[in-house]
Length: 182
Image 1: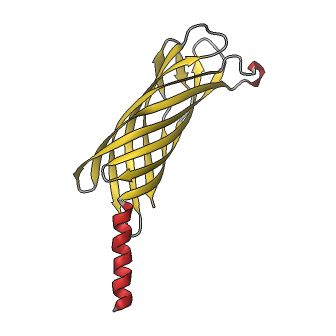
Image 2 (image 1 turned 90 degrees about the vertical axis):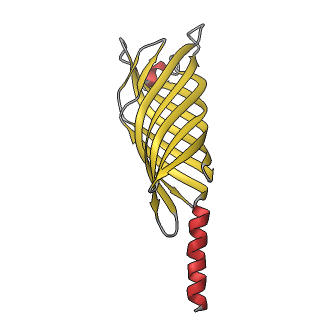
Image 3 (image 1 turned 120 degrees about the vertical axis):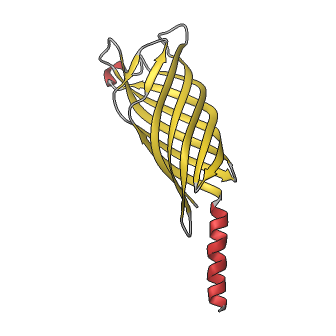
């Protein structure tokens, strides 16, 4: 009887701790759409890694997104990397569904895929990000997990050695992903 009560207590405690704690995630999306001072087009899918810490409906998240862009009128491809830290607020809907919003600070860097350019056209800059989405929390016994769809918008002011003035770049796109919490 004591063993059953202890097992029940551990499972109940694990479920409670899963609602507050660290989580990791992975998201994939089609290419990112861009706008701004120069014309880039997406040339590949995007991938994003997430790590976060939640307390109830609030969370702080770090993310790393990677994709590829090409510049119109150029054969140069660019790897785009966005590193971000953001606050996230989740609004419960019903039956495990939540709507969420994310607002934060991000750093974008464009690196030429052509090694012959040796960093001559690489750009980097900072800006903000904004995201909204829908998440479904899975009801698991020992851990917390979710699947989500989100729409991300980020803006950056990019600079490089060859341009005297910063170049604005806005990126946006959908992604679908999953998280697991511990």
